Length: 166
Image 1 (cartoon, rainbow, N blue to C red):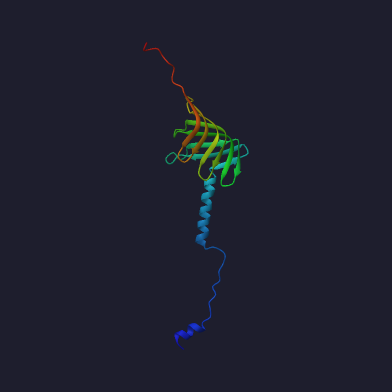
Image 2 (image 1 turned 180 degrees about the vertical axis):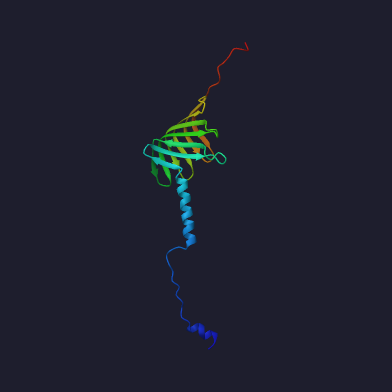
């Protein structure tokens, strides 16, 4: 018998296929799920309201960089939350308030860490000496960048005026 005859008379070999993914695939899936859980743990909805906190990078990783909160948050498709009575606070590395932003409502995108609204916004500096009002905004949490779109009005308070030079 030649080797050609052996292959023509050979029986097909059946390899059992299981529907269970290999261990490596299961571990990768578990790692991805844990990553999403840790990201989503930053945004928490509680009976008293909604809060999402961002922390500084090392060596200040235990200090808050920003805190976005609201009286209530309504989940929407695509990782969006409609937040009522928004309050956004930013902080310095020493823990002091840098700015406080308030708006009646906004949409917070948990996947892109942004908040926006066409509505009114009020901003004040941590020391209260700068106040800004406007309509329409976009907050990019990752960049700590706030853009106010329309009807922007800013008041800057200076120290008491003196007539010492007169």
